[in-house]
Length: 251
Image 1: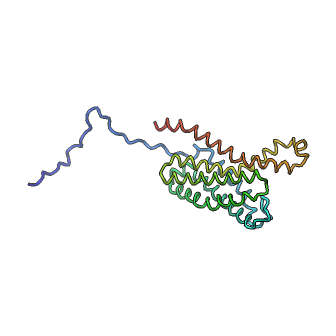
Image 2: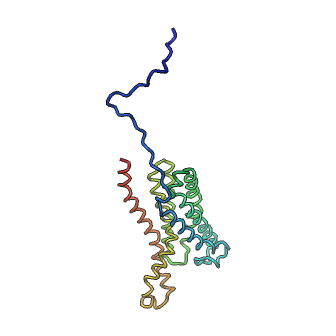
Image 3: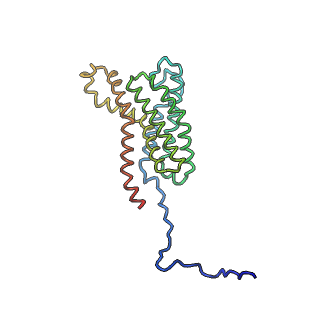
């Protein structure tokens, strides 16, 4: 016996009375570039810092280095050059990572630039920083600051990558923001050092006997720590400030 033909004109089954139809959640509107006005100043600040920091190392001559180069070990300056060029690369990649419009409209660019940030940054930035920090001639405080910075940046970057692989994107974003804050601590160090010099200049005669260079070296240790601690504290405050608003938006 054959089955009766199905009547395609039969109306679709209607939900039981009193049951509200299921609604597809609406996607949030795309974030426009003018709704994040900090992205352009951040890009300009990055470009200005790179134009200041990178050109002296293009000659590959230790005499042109902005940082004192010790006589030993012999690999110090090559490792420093790798660190500088690698830092320039990841500084530019940070702009692609934090740009909301690019992340929304071109997620593939966001993913691939993030992979380059991690897989190139660790050997080109993190490892050279660990190697050169103990031999810097700015004193023990600056050496400790460099080692702590390298350890934290490497740890934050690896944790951010692991969270992305596990598809825990909220945690991934938080760890990567901490990593980005440490990257910009290098540039902020130059600004903070000048600011500390201006503030303490009236005391150069009473504290340092009129030796401005000695005062600059003394303040270098303070700016070395504060330049990455302050941005990291700001990011932590921002993350905690945003969490209640994010929960309310999700509800």
